[in-house]
Length: 395
Image 1 (tube, rainbow, N blue to C red):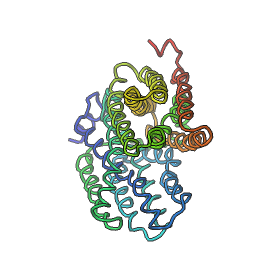
Image 2 (image 1 turned 135 degrees about the vertical axis):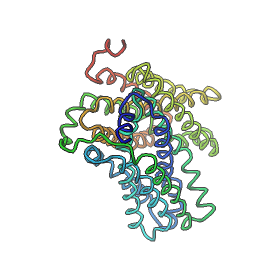
Image 3 (image 1 turned 60 degrees about the vertical axis):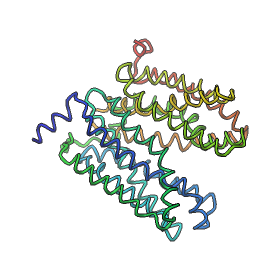
Image 4 (image 1 turned 180 degrees about the vertical axis):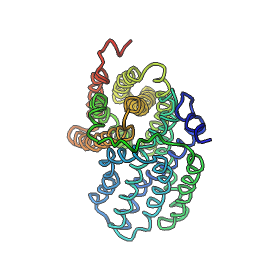
C-alpha cells in the first residue's frame, strides 16, 4: 500500500484532491498570518505603542524568513510533511492570542513564533505541491498560490469580524479552525512518503551553487517587480484616497486588485505548463508595467480596467517562479525554495521603503510612473534564466 502511494506521488499524475487539500490549508494558514495589519490600530491603542514600535511588529514577524535556506535544508533531510501538517495550528495559536498579549514584549514573542511557523510552512509546501502535481507543476503552483492570495483578501475581514463579535481579548477561539486544519492535513498526508536522502546532506552553499543560474536572475526580477508590488499593495488605498478623497473607493480598489490577482495566479501557472515558464514571465513583466502606467495616467473606467489588468499581470508571476525553482532544484528542492523565499522577503522589505521615500519626495503619482518604469527593468533578466540565449527562450 505504501509503495503504491509512493509511486502515485512521483509519477506524472496530477494528484487533484491532495493539491486542493494543501491549497485549502494554505488559505486557512494565511488567513491567520494576515491578522496583524487590520488589528494593528486597536493594538496600538491598547498597548500605547508609537508608530515606530508598531511598524517593528511586522519586521519581527518576517525576520525568520532570513533562515529560509536553512529551514529548507533541514526539510530536505527529514519528513517535510510534518513541517506542513503542524504549521496551520502553530500559526493560528499565536496569531489568535495577540489580542490578549499583556505587553509589547509578549506581543513580539507571539509574532516571532508565528513568523517561524509561517517560514516553516511556506518553504517545504511548494516542494510537496511539486511532487503531487506530476508533469503539471505550474497548475499545482497556481492552485497553491490561489489559496494564499485569496487569504489576503478574506483574512482582514475575518479578523475584524471576529473582534467585532467577541472583542480584542476574546476572539482567541478562532484558533480552533487552524488546529482542525492541521488535524485534517495529518489525515490526508500521513501516508504520503517523502523522497528524503538521509545519507547525503547537501550543504546550503552547494544548493546556492546548483541554483544560482536561476536564483540570481530571479532576484533581479523580484526587485524590479517589487517596485510595482509595493506601490499597489502598500500604497494603493492611499493613492486612491488622495486622488478622489473617497476612502470607501480606496478600500474597494485594493479588493478588486487582489481579486484579479487571484485569477492571475490561477491562470499563469497552468498557462506556463503549455507556453513555457519564461514566456509567461515575459508576458507578465511587459503587461504589468504597461497596465500600471495606464492606471496612473488615465481616469474613469479606463483606470478601473487598467487596475484589473495590473492585478492580473502583476500577481501572476509567483507560481511561475516557484515552478521554475522546483524544476531546477535537484539535490535540495526545499533549500532552493528557501533561498527564493528569502530573496523575495528581502526584495519586498527593501523596496517598500524606497517606494515610500519616493512618495514623500515626489508624490505617489510620480512614484507610480517610476515604479512602472522600474518594472520593465526586470525583462532582460528573463533571458539569463538557466543561462539560455534569447532565441532559445522564445522558441
